[in-house]
Structure formats: structure tokens, C-alpha cells
Image (cartoon, rainbow, N blue to C red; front, top):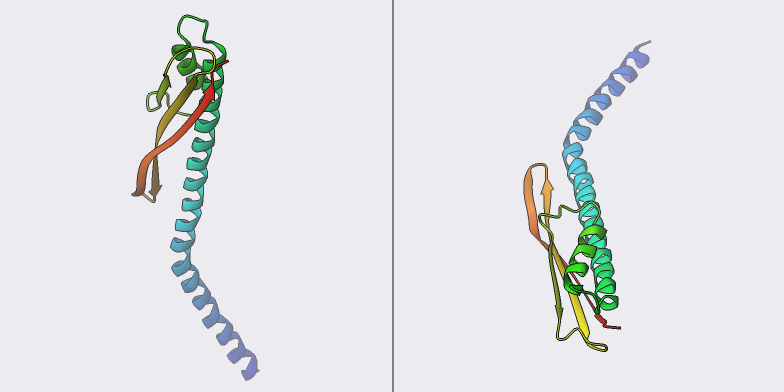
Length: 135
């Protein structure tokens, strides 16, 4: 009977140790988890921005005969940028001349911020650029 009681006390001490270790590791685990989530959001924004710039460049190169090909390209970038805040999206379309064979470059910038538990770790702007030849 004595061995059973002593054996039970040892397990009771280990349960407290497990709870203490969990309490020490939980904040670090949450920090890593939220970092992964923030990285995923930023990567999604970058992929969306890159896709929108490609769509805008394609629109610019096939619409050189229309009234405002640069304006059409900007509108196409904004319409393709699903999920991004258009007020923060900066789009620039540049072409040396709107003639067959010339190059057109579409650039876009969008802000990002890595926020871990209320602390801003990094901030900046995502940037994407595409150059295509006018058809």
C-alpha cells in the first residue's frame, strides 16, 4: 500500500511540471504561429499584386489604339487586385511611345506590415513590375 501512495505522489508532481512547461512554451508557440499567419497574408498580397500587374500590362499592350491605354491598364490592375485595399495601391504605367514594338512597363506598390501580438516587427511596401512589348 505504501508503494502505491508514493507512486501516486510522483505522478502528481509531474502533472504540475507539465503544466509549468506548457505555460512557458505557449507564448513562444503563439508567436511562431502568428508569424506564420502574417507571412501567409503578406505572401498572398504579393501574389495578388503580381497577378494584377501582369493583367494590367497585357491590357496596356493590346489597347494601344484606344483613347487612353494607360488609364485602361490602371483600371485593369485595380480590378484584378481582389482583396487589396485600392486606396493603398499605387499603380504607374510608363511607355516611351504607344507604337508597335515599343515597351510598356506597369509597376504597382502595396504596403505591408508584420504585426506580432500588437508589436510591429517590420513594415514596407511590396513592389511588382512587368514590362511587355506593345502589339
